[in-house]
Amino acid sequence: MPKTYVSGFGLSYERRGRGTPFVLLHGYPLDRSIWAPVARLLEERVDLILPDLRGFGESELPAGEATLADMAEDLAALLDHLKIRQAVLAGHSLGGYIAQVFARAHPERVLGLGLVASQSAADTPERRQGRFETAELVRQKGVAVVADSMPARLTPNLELQKQLRELILRQRPEGIVSALHALAGRPDCTPYLADYRFHVSVVHGLDDAMIPIERARELQAAVRQGYLVELKGVGHMPMMEAPRTTAEALTTLL
Image (tube, rainbow, N blue to C red; front, side):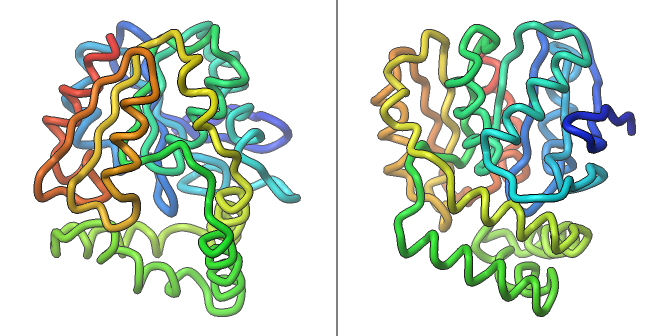
């Protein structure tokens, strides 16, 4: 896969299809491959850009602490490299947080915003502390700490749980630790939702064990132009559990 060097490190990405630029940002602790089922349904309609976030997949991890603002600027640099002025952004979980930070920093570059199994609120103090504790465990014991516990929380689908465990095990511990710290320090984007001038499409599973459906409903109610799809029997991975419905919901951003 091609790489572009942003802020001194290599950011890997995949590009496929043609049409309106459409960025798909993956969640923690995964990589761009989670979007494959949706990408197959969208690539004949849009110009898909699927990056691996810093420290995940084939992307490098620069030294030092990273914030979600840093990760949003990685995206801005990638779009500049591709000579793309404006794009639709869709993010899953962590990717959704990054997309919101990007939208606040560069609203003129956003054609539409898709939030898949994500939210706008910052972590509670308890959740923040839990992330720091998990990061320390990963430092001490490796990626298996997350790979063994997280898949069952990501989806009720047993076959998908196996796939996700293998995917998490392919990630680097340093990337997971960095992302956990960035997640713990993320800002509350709720006050800015009403300022969005673009359409927002929210996709959320009713069986999401990571982020309750109420957060998605609050998002949809807070934006000027919001569309919410609630998926029965779906957990935290709508793009893998219900790819066709997720793809259809995201095409409303066009």
